[in-house]
Length: 139
Image (cartoon, rainbow, N blue to C red):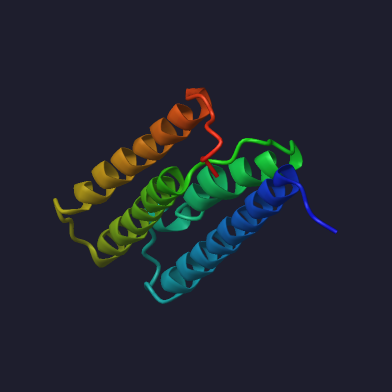
């Protein structure tokens, strides 16, 4: 019994969405534990860091799986997009840790810039794949 391309794409999107959901849960757990031991000091960056993998990762990939979208982003698009989401999430946690510690660092802006660049590049590569004509050699 063979599976169609749409079924494979749907399963991969659901798997990716599940991984992002797990990442969001781990970020929420990490933030809760970190703030438990921060002596009453908290940071909104740390509290809401879980929203990045949830809204930018789990939601769109689970939605793509539910809609059974036959379009699958290429590896380059996915790698850039995942890197952007990871940079934003790590930047958020790092910013939160710095705020809890009571300091700041200009280097945190690198996370926001890298996250934005990689996410936008991933979306651009995906859109290019959508509009370019499909060759028989494309997989």
